[in-house]
Structure formats: structure tokens, C-alpha cells
Length: 325
Ligand SMILES: NC(=O)C1=CN([C@@H]2O[C@H](COP(=O)(O)OP(=O)(O)OC[C@H]3O[C@@H](n4cnc5c(N)ncnc54)[C@H](OP(=O)(O)O)[C@@H]3O)[C@@H](O)[C@H]2O)C=CC1
Ligand SMILES: O=C(O)C(=O)[C@@H](O)[C@H](O)[C@H](O)CO
Image 1 (cartoon, protein in one colour):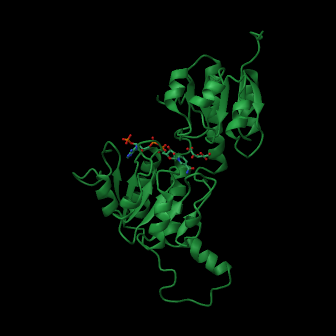
Image 2: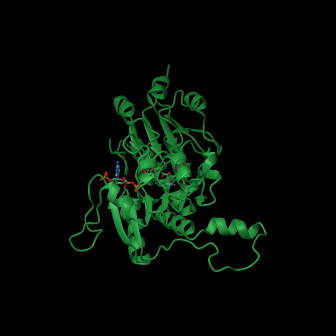
């Protein structure tokens, strides 16, 4: 028999910040996977037995199979804004409470997108590797000549919270013209009567640099593949800070190798933490390990928001940031 007074069990899927988790102990019995490695699907299934809730880091796949194996699961609070790891239909059918972490990581992620753009266009990684390897024998007129950024046109694919923050900083700080493509145009990002919205082919053709900020899902899988890369100018840089799978990494590596576009800056990869070997071989790619939101204040705010949702649920309230399903 289950004890009606027992606190609901909550699986914390990663090492997070213990001080921020402290208030949860009042309402939940915490099962902590206190490690930096993601739980394997089998381990997740096992650890979730008897659990009412999951405090997830974004790496845990919550799909119909997992839900069938974990009949007690009723709630998932994510520390991430992206929730492509959740099978929403199956979650809806189970009536799960779901939350994510929009907004608190917008600035950190946006500034990292700009850092990647500048580092990629101005060949920071490649030239630093050159210097550190002892190959620098002296200055040359066209040595590591990069692509200009200031005053050029930035195409934002996915002008949402993060895309808009990038667009604002690119426009006001770097003097860039900003174009965008969303399924629905966002007003106010162009000049005069021009809203700045472009069809995807026009965005690709008219942007000096492209910033990919769309969520991953069936509608955005390989949104940027070989045909799209072929429509970009040869001097363009492509930045993907959204999710692996939005860009076809193999097609991108091929485009980089034959100079079809100038360079790419990637924070996210298909099948990460594995990275397509062809991309690793591209000198003209700046590759970072999914760190766009990684400032300590931001990571703490992400965890705090997940905790706030869990505390609200314990009080029978809806919580500040439900996933809109
Ligand atoms: N690298 C990292 O560490 C991080 C990555 N991310 C990623 O960034 C993503 C965006 O976050 P955020 O800006 O907060 O999300 P938002 O929901 O605010 O923005 C997403 C935008 O994408 C647009 N969009 C969605 N589908 C399509 C489509 N098929 N074609 C064109 N545009 C589309 C939406 O507009 P509309 O619906 O009108 O089309 C919306 O404007 C997250 O989902 C996450 O995957 C976030 C944080 C950190
Ligand atoms: O919020 C998101 O969607 C993110 O991608 C990042 O902030 C996380 O750092 C990452 O998902 C950790 O797994």
C-alpha cells in the first residue's frame, strides 16, 4: 500500500545547484542523479519508477515508450527553453504538467550567437590554432582575411525571443541590416514599409550572414540542407545556436569543404555530444560544446525557474512557464 502522506518522488536528472533545490525537499522526495553524464534511456526508465515528477536537463527523451514504462510520471519541469526532447502528443495524452525556461537565457544565448558570428567571420579559432601551433612566421597582407560583419545584412531564421535579441544588438550595436524568416512575419524589423520578412529562399540569397534560432521539430528538421546552402552567397557565414538537426551537418561540412559558403559557427550538433567527423576536419568551422546559455547567473536562473514551476505545482498552481501545448 502506498502511504497517502508520503511526498511525491521527483527525479533530478543531473547535477544542478543544491542550494537552489533546497526548497523542493519540503514538498518532494528527491531522487538525485548527481552526475554530469546524461542518464541512458534504460537508466532513466529505471530511475523514474515510482516517480511523480522529473526535473530534466533537456537530454532526457520523454516519449510514448518511456511514459508507458513509467505509469506514475505526471510532471516534467525542464531547465531548458527548448523542449524537442518531449514527445508532446504522448505527454498530452498522459495529461502531464510540463514547464520550460523561456526568457531567462535569452540574453546569454543571444550574446553567444553574436560571439560565434564574430569569431567565425573573423576566423578567430583558426588563427588562434595557427599561432599556438608555432606556425606564425610574420604578418602578411591577406593573412586570415575574414568576412566583414559590421554594416552587413544579418538574416535571422527564427525571430523569436533569442532571435530578436540578436537582431536588436546586431542592428543597434553592429549597424547591421536585419532580415528574418518566421512562419509569420514579425513587424518592426525592417525599414519603412519593409517589415524585414523574407521567404526562406530570399533570406538565404540576401543575407551576408545567417543566424539559425528556430526550435527543432518535424517542421524544422534539416531546414538548412544542401539546397538551402547552395542559395547562400559564397562570402556568407552560417551560425547555428538552435538545435542539432535543424542544419544538415554533413551537407554543411561538404559546403564548407568546397568553399560554397565561407564559414560556419556551431554550438549544437546532430547526435551531440558526437560531432560529425567531416565538420571536425573543417578549419573554417568554429565548434563549441552547446554552451550558448553558459554563464553561471543564467544557468542558475534556468534551474530556479524549473524549481519555481515545481513549487507552484506543489501548491496546486499552474506555474510561471508552462509549455504551450
Ligand atoms: N545553444 C543553446 O544553448 C541554446 C539553444 N536554444 C534554442 O533556441 C531555440 C529558440 O529559443 P527562443 O528564441 O526562446 O524560442 P521562441 O519560441 O521565442 O522563438 C522561436 C522562433 O522560431 C520561429 N519558428 C518556429 N518554427 C519555424 C519554422 N518552421 N520556420 C521559421 N521560423 C520558425 C517562431 O516563429 P513562428 O512560430 O511565427 O514561425 C519563433 O519566432 C530553442 O527552441 C532552443 O532549441 C535556446 C537556448 C540556448
Ligand atoms: O535551453 C535550451 O534549450 C538549451 O539548449 C540550453 O540552454 C541548455 O544549456 C542545453 O539544452 C543543456 O542541455
